Image (cartoon, rainbow, N blue to C red; front, side, top):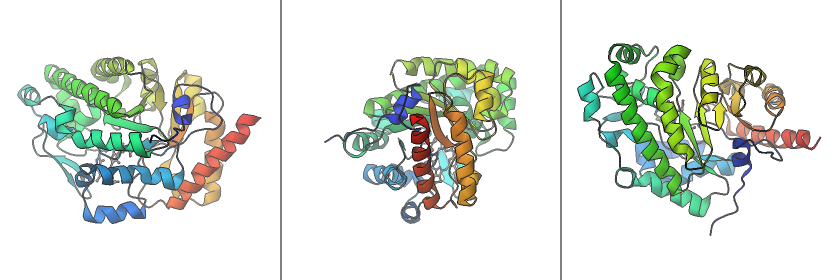
Length: 348
Ligand SMILES: Cc1c2[nH]c(c1CCC(=O)O)Cc1[nH]c(c(CCC(=O)O)c1C)Cc1[nH]c(c(CCC(=O)O)c1C)Cc1[nH]c(c(C)c1CCC(=O)O)C2
């Protein structure tokens, strides 16, 4: 039987009034949880995501332990790439590594299309299991964005400065836009399949797009983001945008047909509102604060809540993912604090 869904997160995402501020944490399912670390000793990331029962369990863990208001499907932004013909390996201590990087228009033309039912049935099965039977909170589906995915595909792995990616973009605009189009088509198909399977919100991770300045974002990225969000808008689920070190692009996101602007810890929410960000804001505690004494965590959370709650349309989150060394008790306590403090403030 389908459980009662707590829709506070979805209401806040749509900018509606809520009784308290909803919260979830990027990378809430993962390395900071002992139960997860035990599973990870036996299975790799890809092995977990290929087993729907196990993957659903990992996805549910933080919901049960921390009482967060949304679950995020446990998988990686690399998950759909093998189906396009990209050879991805996750190297421990390094991250995603690709042994057939994109170097030319011919390489872009070789990339295939994905058919989610055939290529990644395990993702859809995990979503169905979670949303039809197990979860009492909404499930967030997600995808990497074209720039961030392209950065791995062009660099062949993680990068500090994205020089190869930028060089390709400036030198081979035809190949660049062909790549953006192929990734855009994949993302639309992939995200629609996640929504059809039961995901009730979508986050697009453009984690590394902050490397671009505003002008390059407008010329090389915004058109494909506009096409992606316009296509996804038809599905009527909240759409969240996120990037690290990308505050200078928040006003660009604010123009796109999406619902929630995700902020990292660099730009205060109050300042984002003054700049003219009128959509729902999600964020933005520095994940490093979670390593500080509780008094510091509480004081910082309060300061962020006071800014976020100044208007409807606010979701508490970190500015980036939870570090492995964070004590799960801190996340549990923080969630309780956010719920309690915000519900008292909202009653005033
Ligand atoms: C950098 C990186 C990637 N992919 C990977 C890395 C190295 C990660 C590491 O060892 O810390 C590989 C990876 N990704 C993930 C794992 C599982 C182990 C773990 O929990 O860290 C592993 C080994 C989970 C994940 N990876 C991701 C999720 C989903 C998002 C979430 O849970 O919030 C999970 C569970 C998403 C992801 N994955 C990636 C990006 C840029 C993003 C977007 C979010 C971000 O900017 O951090 C690329």
